[in-house]
Length: 146
Image 1: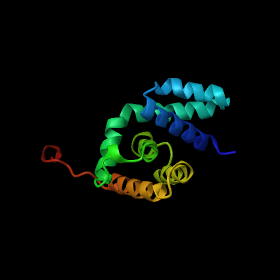
Image 2: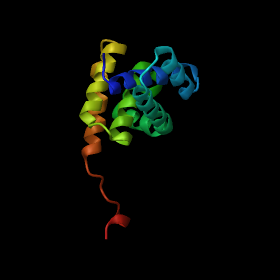
Image 3: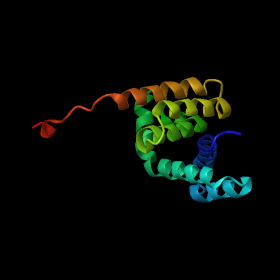
Image 4: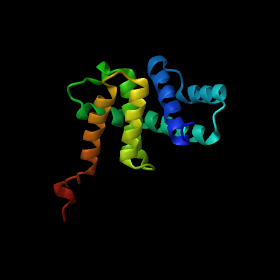
């Protein structure tokens, strides 16, 4: 049986994927998954945090994806890959409750389970670029220098 966070990521992935395809309300989709599968409350709690976080920051997250994968327009990416990337980027850049490398490894595992044969390599490459960029100090603008 997978751990709470792994289960939560799987449910969040499925919820966000359904939202991307059908535009059903993410919270309603998550609630349906929780009821149908009789999920542990901690799984639902973390999955909800992920879903709401991704949903709230999706424009920023998509900008990060697009700058890290310039040769792949986001509209042409496989939806499952895009959704896995969104989840991981939310955890890496906005959530910060798990180490970034753990979030990347979890995303790669999700890609192996739900994506195509090349999904895990693609996701690893994009997330590696985003992680590296996040580690670099941001240069101060002239107005910030005193």
